[in-house]
Length: 214
Image (cartoon, rainbow, N blue to C red):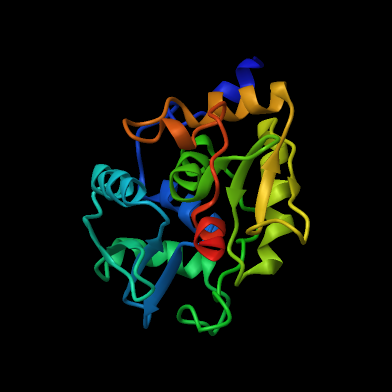
């Protein structure tokens, strides 16, 4: 493993609020309250993801509550906080205060650089093994972000591509032994309960697909 890659790993530096940008790479949402505060939230498929992410929020000094979203799935959400405002100002498009029904309102910031810690948050919220490779879910309401996120992975040694139109859900797909090893090096070991969703685990049916065929 190239030592320059390990410098970007999740363990390379202490946890910080900036790591939570990884949730915005997938389907996490940030909502601004004027220019005074912002709230970060993410709806996930499995309860373990919500509880693990709530701990990750708390490790970064941002208390978050686990609840049930309107769709019935687990949700992690902060209160409106002043210290999350810089994240909102970077990720929300100009003139957009937050997500609309058919538009997330997000855009990848200019000069965005993905880190291992951000990538770990991304995997915890929306990562899972696929039949060939590893899938990192992307926001279906922000298609303009998808190619930019693929590009952001390349400098980390994790070249990837987008899944095709026949995929269950849109995702960035990482394939190949060396790339998967680089990905695992970046995101670190899984927290308890997350082993089945980590690179190298056996693929499981996506909850959305299981629901649609039930």
